[in-house]
Length: 257
Image 1 (spheres, rainbow, N blue to C red):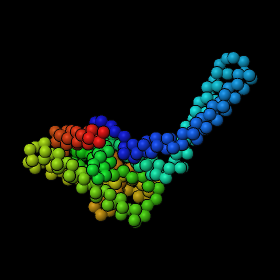
Image 2 (image 1 turned 180 degrees about the vertical axis):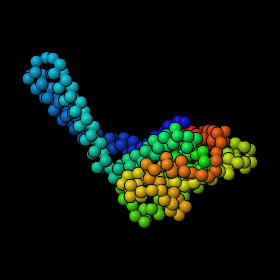
Image 3 (image 1 turned 135 degrees about the vertical axis):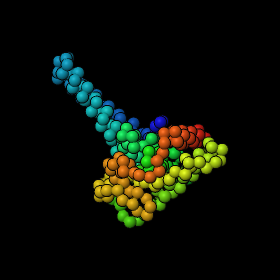
Image 4 (image 1 turned 135 degrees about the horizontal axis):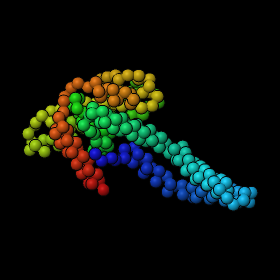
């Protein structure tokens, strides 16, 4: 299956590009300052050490450290000065971590596959997963340091919306493929799941269900998938579903460009 950048990662990249444009002069000044420091350090090493391996090694360390400091400083300035950057960064971490766990689940033959970051007219679906023994999962990845009742209610609502979108996408595509007839693939249960990462995942401890939405700590996702016992999906149906969803996502992306 094709890999795409998570929506938060794409949004973060766009915000960073715009931030660079607004702060070009400051960034040039920072780069020049460190270039001068690196130049002075190089001159000092050249003067103190005789030409040889030690001199070249120390100069390499100095130059690599200077580049690292510049990159780290620019990234830190961006995160500190852009109010939405950290939220998007944590969202990207959550989605990427979930994708890593789904790869583990596929190797263990718990799922047939999944499609990441499906853009829709209103919102998107983080991960649409076709399991072997649990129908289809609409997974919403979240990174939380803390949460409260209001935030949990918001996550439940977002997951239920994602499930509704997933049901519409899966059923529409399968009916279209089969000439409008509702066959067994269109009847698979679509389950709403929130995969939690961060400190809140550890506080959650074990999978729980809130108002029909499964909340699963990220590190518990694979064991949770192994315990599913619901709609069984055969290989042919899974290939059909995943292929249709991949084509749908590619078509949406093409229309957006």
